[in-house]
Image (cartoon, rainbow, N blue to C red; front, side):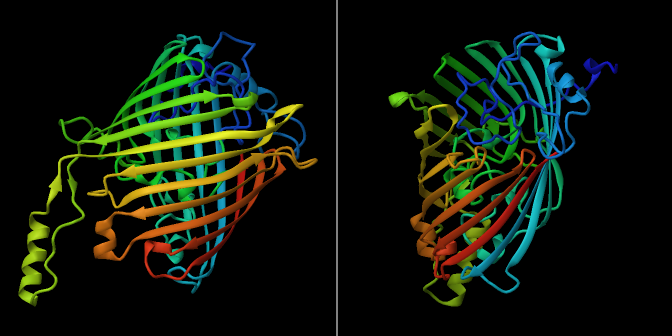
Length: 460
């Protein structure tokens, strides 16, 4: 048998604005609508205890197995039990802007992405306890309908990552996570910031809502790069409370390693502090999350006092002044809140139920164009007879732009509604029907947009 222990020790574990998205759950809170990696929080009984979930690969015939390529005659499960997993998911989105927005000419669009994940669990490999390396690569293809809709909150968030409508393959996660006890760990490396601000019902553009408004809090986008070098401290004082402290490169980019910019000077670092509390009102699981983001990277102010009311010479002089020496502020910050709460679960299967979710975000609006945001909605899994693994959601969002954006660019606010239903055709193939109604797309005077989508996810 190949000596698996000599494979790659340069890799990644998971997310953080904080690499905590794959830290062990305090209990099996499975209403968590299907995770991208299809892991479970079951205890690994075949090896040394590990703080990380064990991925399960079911065999069986073509239509009942968990992945298209199956269990590789038992080899895949054996590798996972020894600490090595490799997964590939392919997402395809067929989307049309049927009415309104920026343009309906040639409004149909096809795009997609492929995600590759390699994980090494140091406990199961027998190297040392409590560690994990994980590497994640992303490839994007096709062309989305985001430009046709022209909304501030893109109707196809999958096309934004790792780079908006760029046909590139990038390494967005290369991270080491290490737990020194059940109460304390660290995560170091290049990390996808979407690990933070998690939500059971509204977090994954691959399996849940498509619109960016239900994937991430937009007030954070100007302060926390999508993929950047990061160092995080993970505190878990109780099973129900997790506290994350992160420092990341404000100049991070998905297609660069980041060593040229990360932590090279006192300016250019973003700091994130998130508190995640698990609650159980009436025995129903829920989460309350609150966070604060601060960046000491110099920001250009939105209000530059352009003199547009005078003659042409004054306008040109004012524009040159702004371009050569714009007004700035030395830092910026934002606050965010996030919750999910089950309202009902089936008595004989707590993995199925319906719940409420919401987000709120606020920034100063001086340098951040997005000042106030909130969303609220319903999500769930199962409930319908014989459709235990289908997921669904209905959400509403409201985004208010900075007053300076409204004054100069005529961009005031945008709001929208999204409805989706995700059908499990087979355990490895999911198809989602999605409808979005976006009011004032672009925050200005564009007509309301009607966007229809079909999304497929295939797990290899």
